[in-house]
Image (cartoon, rainbow, N blue to C red; front, top):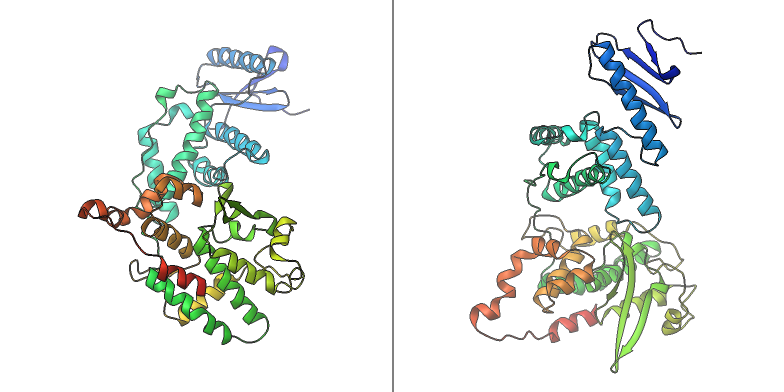
Length: 412
């Protein structure tokens, strides 16, 4: 049997222990509910007052357990873990947002380490300001606005949990602000730079060593062109793409290519620009195990194989290195408008820019196609506004010809 300290007092037939920590004048209490040990501070220096408080707390917890209410304190760490548990349940059920994973990392890495022992009811404006300073020191820099959005959303998930469980009134939830550095403009390609890239790709491929190096260059070429003509995300969305996710359909005598992509924001269907089918056919023709199947039949059969793979069926995660080598050798590595180095993500930004400027696509349609929010499109592509409004600002109706652009795409 556990040895109790001399200053430990037993209440309610041994169910509750009241004791003091070393060098503390206030009494603590401990009891077990449904196998969970609950430890609380009574906040009292007088023993009789502490006993009364501890007894009331025990009965309250017993009541909560009997009525299937959570056995949890109002400590931030406890409420935060409940919020994490709820998000994980939703993710496991396929109902949660992908961003919940980021919220969980934020809560575990930043919020619990700072606020963990505090009660959610005690977090006020000054403590939020103290957290901002602590976070800046921990990160070693001022966080970006996008990072602060994630942190604020994660914090609000915890406060929402506290409100839902009756620990905190909604009116008492502290206001979170975002004063982070604005995200920088993202590097992309102009039409001229994109045309240069397409023009130089074939000769660059022929200069590669025979075997896998050349195979990588061929695959990278089609990978780049598909990213630039669909707006899908490099990485997860592209690597998750399988032939069964690609569909050809007709409407009013016209043929359309559709892809179902899955990644950061869940699954969505996207419509590809017309030249995309040619790049897919090239990948198909290089695939030894499926090239004997007619292309359209391949799509109808819903073949469960990755689209982006080498002729021997290998899926490579090193296409970004091949791309970097290409843009470095051809002098296209640095975006002159942002002074940033281009990556495969630059093709997604190029798609967005071309869609707004050349296709006349509205922001809502672009947000749906790219699997992002209208606010995100507005933040990152607001620099295009004067050119988007040029017709209205000049009083002219201007229609851009796609002949040159489509010819470049076809030659890609």
